Length: 169
Image 1 (tube, one colour):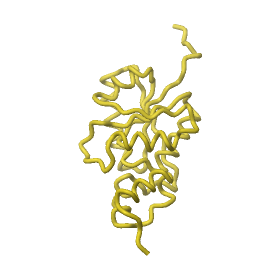
Image 2: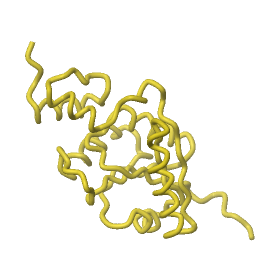
Image 3: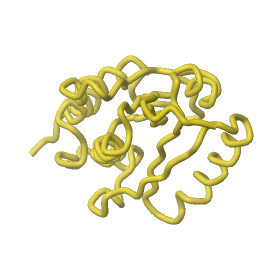
């Protein structure tokens, strides 16, 4: 069977991105070294109670990647594999920070593979400087008026400061 090597290589990078961190940004940029397009699929359905609503999270993703036409931020509902199939993606892109991430991510990848055999999962290790950060940790530090500058894009920092107020000296 002949493969079509001219087909656009599309990856879907799913998550809540509440908020987008520099670790996410790094992974997306590295994904662009492998794929023609990375769709940042911002989940509507989440067991978490997000700080930012779906529109706000999408606005931040699209603002950060406005200069990069190969990155598209979109909201999605329902099964990730259905969304990926409908967008023409062949790969789900996922990031791993530590071994504790691996077990959960491995289970998700196996379930997604069972639901959609033609969809692959690719794991990228985070850059070491982002190893310790997560959206949850960023939100908690910002809530307590900790300095998260340099850990999130500037647009995200501004939104966090609007939500929690600016740090008092």
